[in-house]
Image (cartoon, rainbow, N blue to C red; front, side):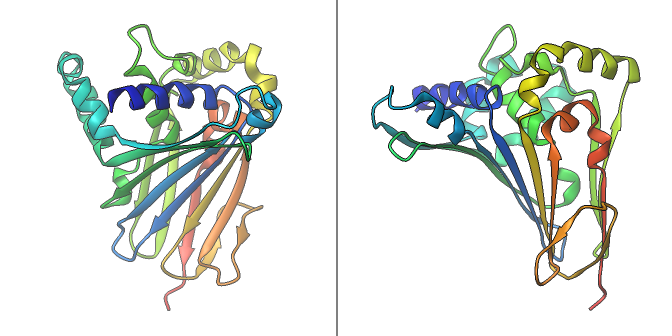
Amino acid sequence: MMGKIRFVLILAAALVMTSCNFTENVYINKDGSGKFALDIDASTMMSMMGGEGGEQSVDTTFTFKALLAQKKDSIAKLPLAEQERLKKMEGFSVRTNVDEKSKKFVLSLMGDFKKPSDLMDAMSLMKSMDDLQSKDGGRLSKLGDLNTDLKYAFDGKKFTRKVTIKDAVVQKQLSDSLATIKPMLETFTYTVKYHFPKKVKSVSVKDALFSEDRKTVTIQYPFADFIEKPEVMNFEAVLENK
């Protein structure tokens, strides 16, 4: 089992540092509970590789709970706040689906939440998973701690996603440090889909798309903005009273 986890983690790091597209789905129920799912599609990478790897396929799933149990001794040495942050990851699982014959390469991060405030930044989850497997920081260590504070809220009528930058100087340093890989980042897209229990009356994003029943809102961002200008992903949706 641990061998499979290690294999998936290597694939995860390769996915995030290779040309790919991110699709995040957030499902909100009336009581504020819901589901979170992030699909990272790197099928383009498989096509670029051609037939070098043969026709192997991998479809495996593991839980963060298993990974945290494996690393419990080292986690116990971390500051309490960090331990509590990692504890929130227990309900998430990771599925990797690789099929060389059909050129499919998708990694999915999934989890349930009891209230929106329990939601975590998707990239922070990926980075934590990567870092747990490396003493010197994983391949995502270049992204730092993302220097952001992300909060979700839902009162039954209004849903908000609010991210604030902790330190402007650190944010500038982060942006500068990504200069060498920015051309690659600019080929990525990050699509967010919010699914609500009622029709959406209005949203704060000008280019947002609505489903036919107006219960799903879709927004696409350049991935570079997700890292360098995370505040552009702030979002507010007001639901109809019906």
